Length: 213
Image (cartoon, rainbow, N blue to C red; front, top):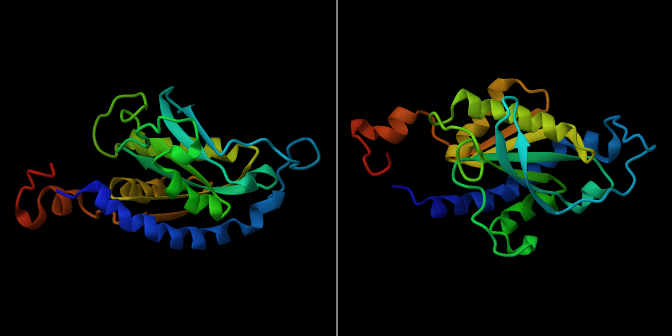
């Protein structure tokens, strides 16, 4: 059985490369260059919280839990957003209101330092999210990505462009999100995701993986 903590460590290093490559996708939209208008004649100096936790309501009324990390750049410019949708519980509780004490702080910093927002979401029926869980990576779960992307695009700090990434299960979600054809999703960077659930996870080499299953 794979130790998820250990499997996640290489991704923390590789996200540096992802964070370095992804910003090019947003250059044309930064600083209000996408033509959006706040209604006050410009972006101005918005109040932003570095870390916010909240519920986002999907098309069927299900409330899914999300953490949103915003960089300082969001105060004055419109920025891109990287989304991760997980079933492994997005947060175990920092025991403190300080973002620096959050268990995801170091990972989030990779994106914030690149001038990108990072949104970490509990899949429906997992973590703090509501909803029934009818299976792994169901159509309803993947379609939640569309609601997330649309919500992000409507925010005053967003340039309307999103990417998605993840390791293992979240990596598979990143791949499946592409099939939605959502106009706000411009990049997907799955890491260490499986290709075939049957052959790679449940029956590798033709033998039932009892421990993993």
